[in-house]
Each structure stands twice: as structure tokens, then as C-alpha cells.
Image 1 (cartoon, rainbow, N blue to C red):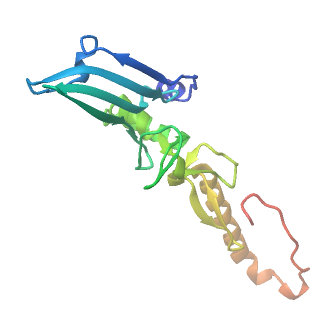
Image 2 (cartoon, one colour; image 1 turned 60 degrees about the vertical axis):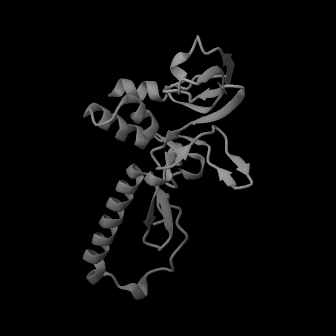
Image 3 (cartoon, one colour; image 1 turned 180 degrees about the vertical axis):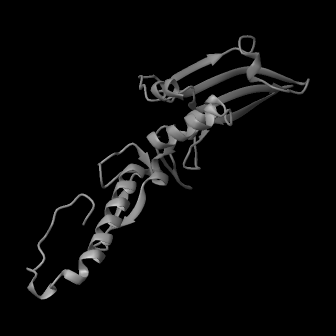
Amino acid sequence: MFGFIRRFFEHNRHNVTTRRVQPEDQQHHFHNLPPNITPIESTFNVQPIPGTTCSLGTIEKVLQNMDELITSNQRIGVCCGCGHHIFNVEEKVTQHGVQRGLGGQCSYCALEAAEYLNQNLISLQQAEEHSLYCSQCASYCDGCGRRNICIRHARPFQSLDSSVLLLCPDCLRMAEQDKFFKKTLAMMLAPFVDYNRLPPPTQRKDPYGY
């Protein structure tokens, strides 16, 4: 499991691969063609996702039907752990809206994926896809400042001063324990505190807003 996590977070530089392939070299890219359809060529515009075996991009196929040439475009994408499908590394703005891009790899999603993989519930490729999040689901933690998390694992937390923070699961657990301890302590000390003699409250700087 830990080997998968280590390999998952290894970031290598990959170049966009665009190549033209004759059908006799890549027959497996043409599936279940009718007898009267002849494959001509395929053009790959595919970019690997660093640290995974997944890729994003398009494959353009040219087929011949008698005297007519047929062109088809196949999109290659992944279903991220945030629940969204992506087909581009970068966000693209089109006339129909914004197409999501690759946001990154969430460390907590990767731990979930490794656990599912260890239980043989998903394949390696599904585990890699589960660990990714799209560009519009990128988030952060107000507690530790961590940036490599998705919005699914950045959860809102209301502090004692009613401010709302986004916290990662680790910071959220510590903040809830700290909040419970302070509330319990305040309740226990309340009968012995003379609030009329307390000094005015000062501005305190606390990472959790207490």
C-alpha cells in the first residue's frame, strides 16, 4: 500500500505526445469495424498525468467507407475522486462554458484509494483516478496551510468566536478536541468566575480562531 502512495506522489516531467500511426501498427485501436470500413490512420494528442499511468487528450481516427473518408475524435479522460470527469490538463474556456482541468493529487484521496486497492475493491487505474481532483475542486486548509487537498477533504469548522474555517481532516480532529476541551473547562469554571472583574477581551491570534 505504501509503495503505491510513494509512486503516486513521484512527479516526473512528461511531454505531450503527438504521433501518427498506420493501422497495421496499431490494429487494437480500431475495434469492431464493419467489413466495409477500412482504417487509415490515428493521430494521438495525449498527455500523461505525472505520477500515474493515466493520460488525458484526444485520439483522432480516420476511416474509409468506400470513397468517403470518416473522421472521429475520441476523448481520453478520467473520473476524479471529487466525482468530476476531466479530459484536459489545463482548463479550457469554450462557447459552452469552462471545461475542467487537472487540479492535482489529494493526499487524503490517495490514502483512501490505497486502502480500497489493498482490499481489492478497485483496480490500480481506478485508485490513481480516485486520488485526483479537478481544477474547480482544489482547496486548502486554514489550519496547517496544506494545499494538496480537494474540497471533499476541506471541511468547514465553526470556532468558538463563530468564524468558519476550512480544515483538513487532521486539523479538524485537533480543532474539535480543543474546542470540546475549552467548552468543558469553561462550564466547570463558570461557577467560580466573577465576570464583572474580568479585563476586557483582547485580540488573540490563534490558528483555529479561538
